[in-house]
Image (cartoon, rainbow, N blue to C red):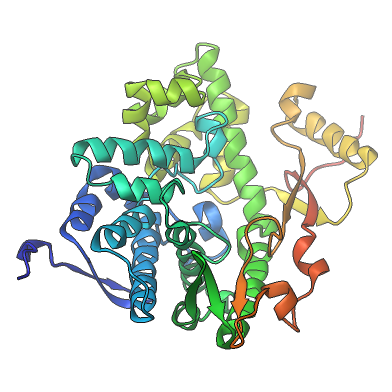
Length: 417
């Protein structure tokens, strides 16, 4: 007998996968909750739409998609004879659905600007605990799976590993919305090739080429989309806008800000204080991209020239010039640009740090120490993808690629003094 409420048998028409069904009444209730609905107002790729105009999808889309892939993965494992109870199935669906519920606005850009030294995964855990109280303990197994304390470790691997449903969805979805075809992976085949050996997820050997494509696609997407040089420039301008706004607030300036953002401008929250402060938790649960952008629009008219200029840069897409290279920039070059900026904008040394940004970023396609992607052969042998593949190699995978970049305003005029 099907006891599901007919009003909760909803479907989503997803542009990537087609129709997605809600598998359980509790999943419907969690999706309807304000904590989860906030994800509709947080773009998956932050400011990337300034470079790829189609990248307007949200963390709501991604979370629903990742849950959909998880449902498919569980179905495949059950078809192959593995015992997964209804409670475990619901638990892993809850864990993947809520894995990003603690994400702040603008992707990872402002992650440590709002709450110091607290990752969004930890904030997700805080909100999952609050939801568990509200739903009278029904999220208990889901939280255990999310935190990797549940006995069946492979369920956590579906949520968080080097070949999890989170990564499968965001690569396929981000590729779709940016139009970067190199990121399009065959998630269906990878899921169909899933198998379990000794409580560990493995991929049957027939799926090795799909895994190779997945790793290469991830590498290409990082440098072509996630760490695109113009995206880096925009993100660092945004970080400095918030830094300047916080400094001015601390100095007694009254800045326009929504109530949610104002809480974080007026207070410095670390991990301990945030988790114990109901005001901070409530404000964060309402904070989204609109809070940030509405405030930045107003700050374009602020009397502080630094805040105003940087805000104009984001609102009008007048982004900084960015140079990127394999080696660190020479100190002499950085100093020369700083002198030009200081002269043109009439800044002191400290203020100049808002306009001249020298930093680096790195990424590796596959972390050899981060939990292997294992391939299962017909004879029972299990090999790491690096050993099993004739396409991939250790040096390409294990060594992170580091890029150094230098950002500064365009059209600097030579100093004639």
